[in-house]
Length: 157
Image 1: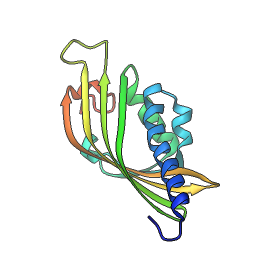
Image 2 (image 1 turned 30 degrees about the vertical axis):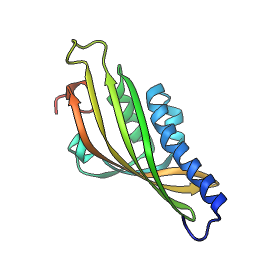
Image 3 (image 1 turned 90 degrees about the horizontal axis):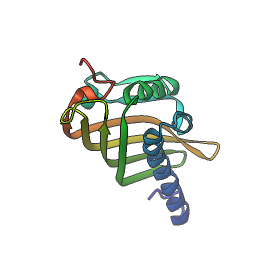
């Protein structure tokens, strides 16, 4: 707990930060792209090198949302987010969490219709006008099973 925050302020801040992280997961599952965008700062540093094999980069929030739209089109997903470790320092925060993502494509043949991953996320956030916004996302993959071609962002990779 940061010394400049009272215990109550820290609990409230932690809760709001976890709401953002879980909200991102739920927005992706619901394909609510406007809601997803609302959780993001204008630009985001992303590192999906463990999953996508591409180098870390800085992109706009709009480009990030567009990547999710393209990667998850026609998929049913279930993002689970847990084990949140939150650090808050004034208007800056970090959240380390565990995740499990199930991806299902009903149009694909049985046995080639799933791609599931599990691992850790590291999110960095800033507080803007009392609201927490994500400025960086790093995904570490611990487990990957299924057909990589299920995910639109990995097809033909």
